[in-house]
Length: 297
Image (cartoon, rainbow, N blue to C red; front, side):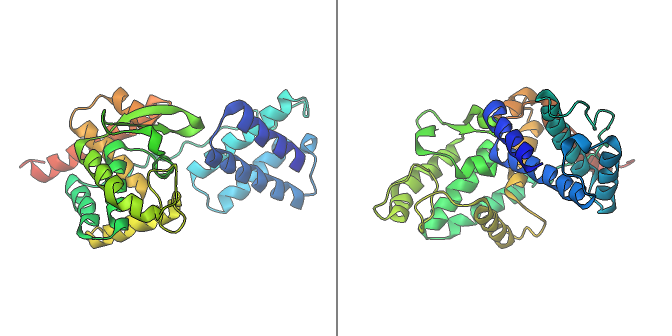
């Protein structure tokens, strides 16, 4: 089975242009199936029937995987077996009648405008070169709504401060232009003027935001840790990730009348339905305000 998985992952990389994270997700899901099948003595994809697939998803539900995770597994396996069908390795798709469970609608966690302002103020209290970098990173993250992977991989030649925009590579290496505000421009200029040269210590780097240890981009885990520390300093004790700032960016734009299609373009969503989740966030916010404020609510 492993050789077929390798061929499939190469196909996703070369023909579909999917991101590294997406391909790793496919790989994990398919590997989970192969482990399950191996325990049943099945290593040949031509021997996989709909009964084995049903047993596998029953196994996942027993492990208490969420409907969203089960649905993702179904998508991964459907793509894999369709590939095998196209390559004429199998003659029948064992997932042909498999229906994805409808995941429960969970609203994204967001910060209030006041919480965002408190969070952005924290690095400014520091005097170190890292604090200057962190201040610019947080400001850019909230100003643009980019994914954390896009932020840490942002290169110098993709930042245009004179015209106020960045060029980022999203999922599937799709390029998009995102405007940045005056506050982000100012903080980037300050960082470039003093902190970045000190962090480089005579070395060179193509990346905008660097670490002093490697003079290269930081890891997503490191930036997540930085955000959590600043959140605690700001008195924000709820669970916070870089994606929370992305959600806050979109929600705050919508609250102030931004068009949903514009938000979709800035976030890099390929489907408008993905962006529409923020309309539910806004409806819930208005409902909460009404219940709290209306005398007959």
